[in-house]
Length: 363
Picture 1 (cartoon, rainbow, N blue to C red):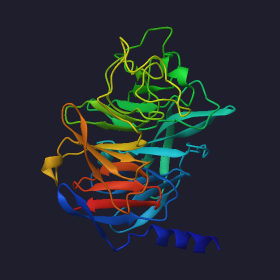
Picture 2: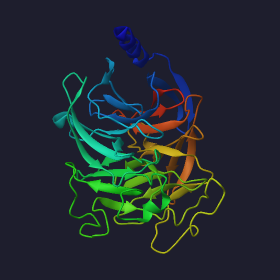
Picture 3: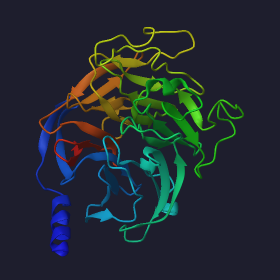
């Protein structure tokens, strides 16, 4: 019986052959399912040779190549509750040499849970992870099972930026003594860079780079090396933020949204010493994965931001100064988009939770 279940799983993951079309500002593009049979696909990462890694929140990591699709074993134990589970995957620039990948996930901590970052090596044959090491755990733990944040990116200098949500405990995002509601910055081995803004302060966690964040579920680096996030607001007030060293992004003191009850949030939309978003949505689109495009296949889109919408089932394309939403990339297949990523060949891949499928957009 076990062998038949494994065989069925491989068939479900197999690359389908059909394709559909998508109308965009760049004309008619092809949309092709690449990996199917997933539960909640959460993140997509690419190796330099084009191989893809996809996380399924229930605790599976999928490795895709044009020749085969398989599940990778040896993953860390996750808390698959609420918004928790196996979350982001990041493939570093030196993967061809190091064979390392980085994973974020919700980890059990006492009676609660937190956001964790781990590093592991992909074994030959891509069937298993080895030498897994937990580099970081958020502290203190939370008893909620939401707002883990949990995107990780590699900066130009090799440091890692990791987003952590407020865990639904709003005041924590203004408390530098907690990791909740922050972007943290780590060295690749998990140690703290000495030039982090709050190093040496007894009232602050040294890993924190910026704070006052609600739930950043999208993060990307632009051609200038700057860090951007896409963050969930409450009822309105979803934000795109340009992250700055030591900056306070205001949650829950300022916001362009309201509580789900309709009540006012904090003190208004601005306050001295707190950052303004580069763009905000009202009503909320529930933004998730974020990608800044290279322009490899579509030069007109070079440097533009693409953000998945969980609520309205489209990919938002944003550009300009000031930043504005320019296009809604949408079809019958763009249902509840959790991740958007650019492959090495310039195609755009996205993950749909509704379909349990990872798709590719190509010319």
